[in-house]
Length: 370
Image 1 (cartoon, rainbow, N blue to C red):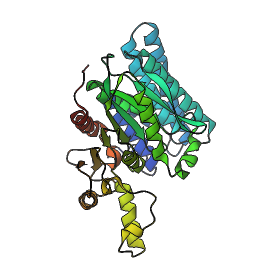
Image 2: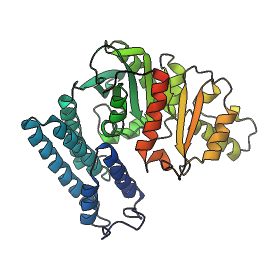
Image 3: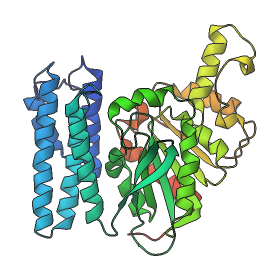
Image 4: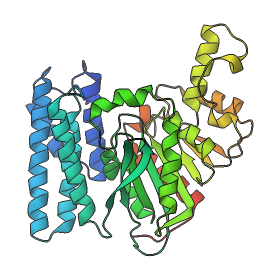
């Protein structure tokens, strides 16, 4: 029987786009071990339509169940099961926090529980991961998770993963770590929150220099004896992360980048030019030059879904018209026929990430495998 909140096309609560998107994220996370289909459908049957408290309560309860299961497995020496349950728990805690107001104390409690599960997961890995602090703004350092390459020996190619403002790094432990590990990469998962609550997002969105975070991250990686600093790449998870594209212009030490390539900046330039009937887009007031209009040496991969916010034909046109000095910019469009076609590849992130990490492997070079 179809769960009460699910429509025939597996959209949960069609009147709530945010809830439906989060439920889709949870279902697709099952492909990488961040959820189970059975648990997700169980919760869908128990939710009360239009009741955010029901959503928070049920996902928090499920997170606690998985967390307890992880602790029991760890106490008995079953580290693999403990890690899997901690990953599911942190993902469910993230879901529980999602619909609550950023200033809601229950949201912060869920975030802290999510972060504790992440730390427990890192400590149980072999080689163990670690929580790292990286200087950024005065009084506001970045916080990240560094997961060494599976070989645990020598210097390894390393991938930085960072999301748009508002995204938390714990999601990368489910979404991206398996792909890095299979290819022998180390991975540094970051977000812009540091140790701040979710209402810090307002301060982040007011800043015009988010790209300034990346040089400090590179400075930190350069100090590590287990990082092959000539082979460091970066992934801007999600879409619209032009701050990473702008950072590539300022950071010659990056060997490869997966980001929007400045497409969103270019799209805004074109929009304002059309809005104000300007024929010369160079005089349109935008804060930064797009990556593809500059002579960056770093190879760039842009991926998008044909059903996303920016239509594929428009993206192709922007890329074609903006290759002025760029020697290696690649655009990959995922079609509905192959899936991965939704905004930020939300319908099948695994497929997109396989492509992304294969591309990174071809640019950063092969490493020791698991």
